[in-house]
Length: 204
Length: 96
Image (cartoon, rainbow over all chains, first blue to last red; front, side, top):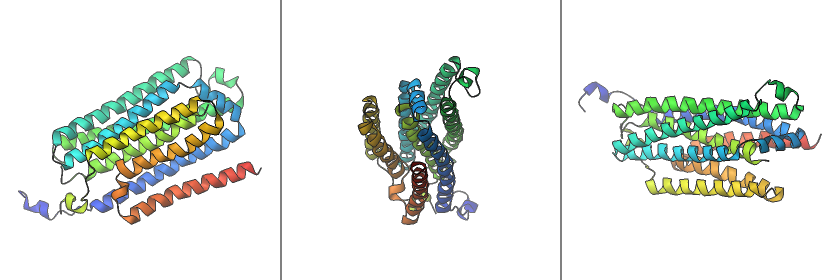
């Protein structure tokens, strides 16, 4: 090692990863609470939730699933590549993950614009005329996919930062913990979408 | 200490690729089952396939399969707690 002081730097990789997982547990409980809310209201308004689901665009929902699943693959490859010493492939896959994340948000933009164009958004006059079950369905739809979208945005920013670290060789094949933790966050965002797809788009 | 010494296992590319193919196939089956508009088929498909997909992401993409037992136990406890609460909710809703 060139820098002798670097030898004494203590890095607790195990603790760092555990800390990341503990944070992910709070995310699981946060979204879990919303899933419980969804289930409770679905059992109270089954017809409205069924009709609401039919109104949503399945093609966009499925396309976004494929996008997120693929982005999970690319971030996982980025970790394997970096550890195998293939920095270029790692940088390429990390960039691909960020692009896929942006594609997801653009899809979301198109989808939401369509809904808003139809006069369906929280507190809209059109929605106010509809039965209460419809209002709750679309309220949950906007809050749950919106909160998830914010997580995608946070993930994109986090991965962009890690990409800079990899390019500057602050994150390397022997010190990849930050990439690993960012990857864990991105995968969890993917898992949450795996559950959102059947709840909103397929349960019609 | 370099991190490679602490976390020896690298997931091979082919394993990652296979998991991705499986995830896409399961999504296709899930969508096909939901398009049949047949509740006795689509609801169980949803209840089985969705957790299997999440499990694949947890175990392979998130490296959980290769982690120490205590971390696996923590994840199962958290998910178990969530499943328990959802179970209690359905018990409450169905018995009202």
